Image 1 (cartoon, rainbow, N blue to C red):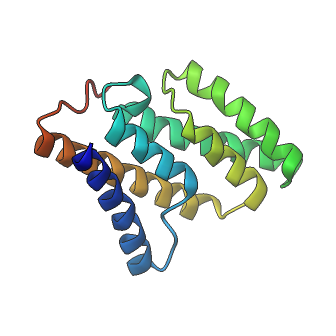
Image 2: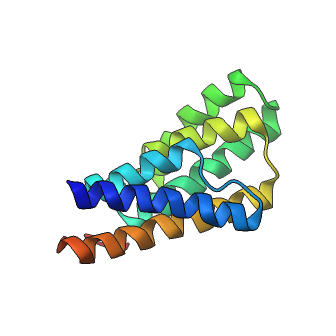
Amino acid sequence: MLLSTAGSVAALLLLVAVGTVLDRPLLIPPLAASMALVAGAPDLPLSQPRSVLGGQLLSALTGFAVLTVAGPGLWSAAVAGGLALGVMSLARTPHSPAAATAVIVAVAAPPFWSFLGLLALACLLLVAVGLGAARATGRTYPAYWF
């Protein structure tokens, strides 16, 4: 438990550090939830790299699609968050924290390319820390890649 917690704290601090260097925030609330899954339940389908990266990116794209059609706002956010579940299910990339990413996109309307690029980088860093933490604790992560 202590090593999983330490890995989670380290990953989130890494996101803050890299974000500081890039002068862009990398740590958003859904990524803290993603790391909790990777560190605390590494065997779950929701925790696998395919789901972390794919679920987050597909949900962000869903948020941008809704944003394009309906504009920013809470109504758009509700639709985007709900649709993200269906998109992730169709793509076999279940990752519940990613639904919140769709909500953030639909409310905040961030710049498309920079948001997606930073989100991808953040997800890759979380998975990398998950790999390192698994090696340190003797756990197996990931259970599968694809």
